[in-house]
Length: 209
Image (tube, rainbow, N blue to C red; front, side):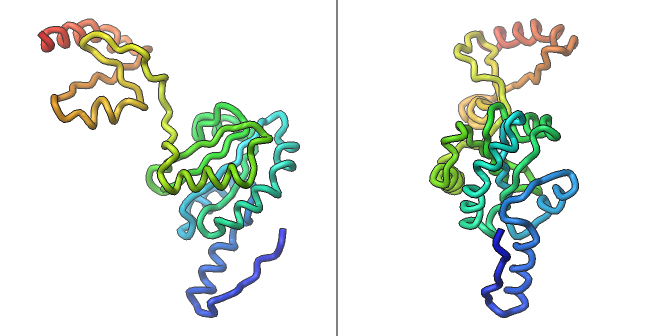
């Protein structure tokens, strides 16, 4: 990796900005040892995680490293580019980042608050400078949807009690202007929920009529 060169401005603010940006490599491994430093970085707008198949991690990383370095230079000081060891942090990749297939890129913004995530899925040959740049610009322009952990959207939703999942919550609950919404947060494994649900359905039928 080329050594960073300070090109100004020669002011205290310029020097501080340079130091804060260059404290991180253009494309480096993220671990439990440095996660907090990345998370607390005040200069970047977020993290771009590169996650590869655990079985071919070394090969995939070698194949895509130069390409991701090239893209990272376009966004230096805007996003920090990192890769995750999906063998050591498999659960983190799946449950926290939302990786279901590989390779996956995760652009995570608003690190200190919501940690909003945007995902790109593809095949190894499809991860190119153009594709990654298009993905990032799509996030910045609002063309890429936020990743939400959710059950599949119901194909049918009959009856007075409608099933709401994470992907339909805003539309079905928060955006409803014509009528009030009573929502029952249901856990399939909860005995109290199972006992209450027939009563809840009866209430819905009564209100509907």
